[in-house]
Image 1: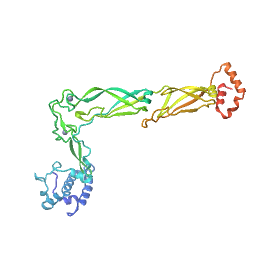
Image 2: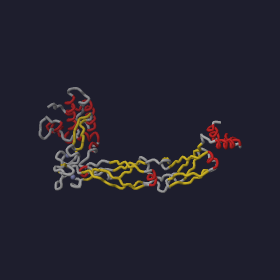
Image 3: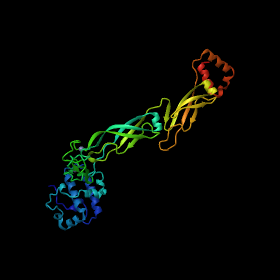
Image 4: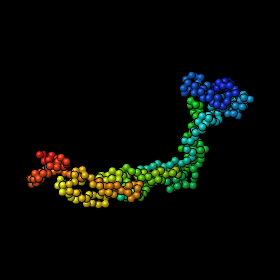
Length: 375
Ligand SMILES: [Zn+2]
Ligand SMILES: [Zn+2]
């Protein structure tokens, strides 16, 4: 065994009366210097081990006292002998705790069953359904709790037993060396996957998984105002967890089919209306599609291109503010004819001769007319 019988204070390079902080500081400095991962000196592993042993003893008041009184014999294990290896050391966690406040153990799961996976269901609805809300029935296949064993995974009449590898703790501890000494790594037990129990006689229906695939039908309530890409979360409707673990969630991803003539942006709707130059000049009534059916909208005489008419409250309901709705914006596009009959040309020329052209400086309307006529 490589363990030397050097004086432990000498190993750490401190006085016999050094306080705890000085011992810790000295150990930390030397451990970094001699860690085999960074120090390739063939002596490094032995030196590092020697340092660790010395610190292990001198950082423990009771063992330090025994060492001071009886020397090495006072602190070597009950089995005696100087050949104390790493494995023989109790309480590696002490070193870790000394430096990190014992935060090492938080991550491990202890005997807790794993939750089931979340699921996603893609649901397509119409534009009107999105605006008004709708109840939809969906059907999907899902890993559900096994009815034969009620989810335990054990054959009916048998029980899961305590895992022999971790004694039911669900976790195993691994010790590894690092710059700062031995680190205790706690991980889920590989035998029982952290559950703490194993099944010796599996259920024949689910082969011990505790789940079987089944068809599930659900009513999903789609709120008015939902939009493309929104997701509705249904807790506990996802996969069951293995062997009685809690179920995951079902996410219903909503897809909305576009309206042929209404464009949507959040709660606002947009409709592009087209009127002729004569309708724009003389005024008219157009039919605008809304989610409540067609609505007649007045185009006032003298309406200019790119005029916006706002139909308040005819947009999409606000998802989170009940009773509140957006607007429907009618964007008026004045269409200039590109082909004219003989009669239309004569009428427009007569119109121009009447002085219709004279307003072109203040309005783009007649410029468009002239451009279109190529004159
Ligand atoms: Zn079963
Ligand atoms: Zn285990």
